[in-house]
Image (cartoon, rainbow, N blue to C red; front, side, top):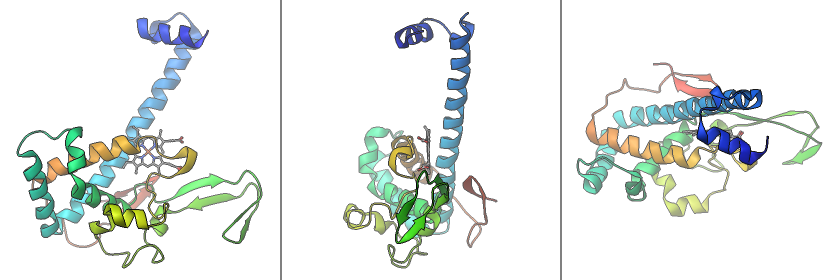
Length: 218
Ligand code: HEM
């Protein structure tokens, strides 16, 4: 079956009803990939949002400054993608929360051949762990790394930093394909939530657990 047959078949009727077994199996695989993609993407976005709200609930001045910015821009209208460029501070807050609490704190790669990284020999077949959790708190890149400070994400500061000092969405050919969508939906959701609700949180650092993605336990 050619690609154009495939696309015609899936457009004209549900492929699950197709008599062609290739189409039925293909649809099952595509559906499973899409469901996994959407579930994991939504969960990552939710975890980033949960972290933000927790931080904001613990810091009233931050909440107020963000809330007044959102109010000025949007009144009580529903926010849309068109508003996002004007929500610069909300975006900075979101990025700072993702720095301290990246939803994927560790990423893995398998070395396909011998290599040399930072003076270390990496043999073929070795597991290589990249750790946003550690890099995002590394004093070589971040001044007072444990402090929550959205000002780290002004366009000037971002430009001055190493490209991979912040990589909650990974990088390279296998980087997150949902990054732009996720930033868009998260900025809109965060700005709307902060505008419309008041959040409270117990004081102190949230306890976390890591099940592929990092999430609060309470
Ligand atoms: C805050 C939200 C999100 C975070 C933090 C996040 C993070 C990540 C990370 C760290 C990776 C692995 C990159 C690597 O190994 O280098 C990844 C991969 C991926 N993400 Fe996301 N993600 C988010 C939202 C989404 C959304 C909304 C979608 C889909 C709509 C999505 C779809 C994917 C897919 C399909 C991959 C696999 C890409 C590949 O292997 O080629 N993600 N994501």
